[in-house]
Image (cartoon, helix red, strand yellow):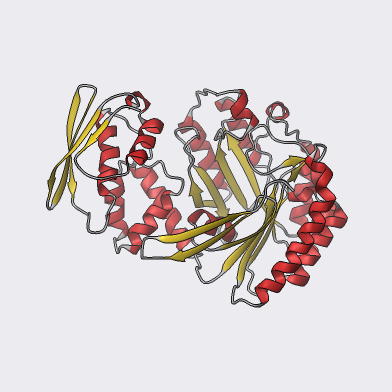
Length: 445
């Protein structure tokens, strides 16, 4: 990384990471950023690669302590004539920034102005942010907690996956029975612990891995143990991921329904079967259709996940998947932009370079979701995702996932059980700062 010269204090590593992600051509260059004025306006002079600009903006330092670093980042974008839909925002949770502004008593109109002028976010993305935050505010509840139970097993390991998941036929699969017994003990002990606290569980989410890989008997044992040991009097939502239909049976769906599961995920990721074969995630379309139909019949709310930008897929491939989506009356849709993480096999094998027509894909996505009467209700971003994208959750009114909202907003404490689960304690220190403590459970059973 090249030399950065400043006449004010900021976290240089934060700025260097921003440059690495959005302005890589400046990584090895000398950069000078000088503060020239700090009264009713804050003025920075930025210089690099023979270019120089002045960036002037209203002084909000009394509320926005990080205004200097924001202006340094955005000023460099201006200097290099870089334009991104999200401007200078590279954080995972841009909606948290909007809530921070609200807590500082900014109006939505003032927030829109700051996002457009200070952060250089496009009006279209600003509207999306504001709409999502308004939707989320109805659900946020700091007075309760949520519970996450991780089942870290899958029938096969998807090549893009970086989560705690192990193939049943692999070496870790040998510990499946011991894992289930230990999980049952953990659920029992957690129930005893909770009886001595005032914690109230608002949502329960069983994820993984692929939780539906549990045998029918083990699924019943786990769900019965939850019912017998955990006080769910205040629970508003119970979700179990059933993303791989090769792990599902009608009986498993009946067991879920009997023990109070309300929501499941059935995740095609793409409807291009050749792509799924390459990703080590084969899909039996006929079985998918049968499981979907039966889940609807017994009254389960269904979310479907799609990944946009899988290797080898063209714009037309993605448009085909979105068209196929019309055939399924799911209540929720979650779209992920492919993010290559270092823990994934795909990251280790290839660095993909794709040319996709984002405008055409986005237009089709919103055509489909509007046709289904779905609206965006939560979102997040990833630094290693395709530069144009964000991960979006869409839902029909009244079927939004409380757990997803609380997790993305880091608003509610989480009690994590099982493999790879993260227990998270969130306590407000001020209007804009939360103290977050994390305890990570072992990933390997």
